[in-house]
Amino acid sequence: MANYAAHIVAGLVRERAALGQRTVIGLPAGSTPLATLREVIRLHREEGLDLSSVVLFLLDEFYGLPADSPQSHRLWLQRQLLDHVNIPADQVYFLDGQLHPSDVDLHSGDLTKLSSTQADSIWYCSASVSMVTLATTNLFR
Image (cartoon, rainbow, N blue to C red; front, side, top):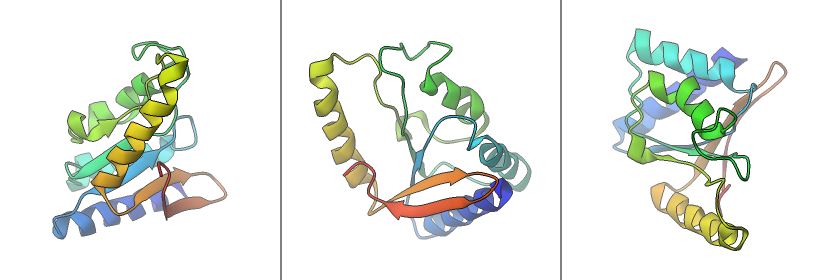
């Protein structure tokens, strides 16, 4: 299933890039998407999948952790995907786990506005043994 999901993502990225459009992806952290990410990396390295038009939103972060903490989802994404592909750093967005509690809603609102300026819809990508989910959603709206 993970390979199938990766190929759906790759097809979407190629299709939208050919039209001069970005592909906006909301990606969860954790073990579920790892096999999909590995296949996306392989497609990038071995088949020339160009991910430079991808805008990526990491959907998870632990509150209170600095970005460079070994448990940080930001660091996880860097190690599991970003170190291996050509998604520009300025097209990757993270939740800030160290915000003051009074700033959380403002930060979420800023991400909502930002995501809505990037594309008409956000693609949420996750894969597991039993199912593949790749559907347009309005995760930040």
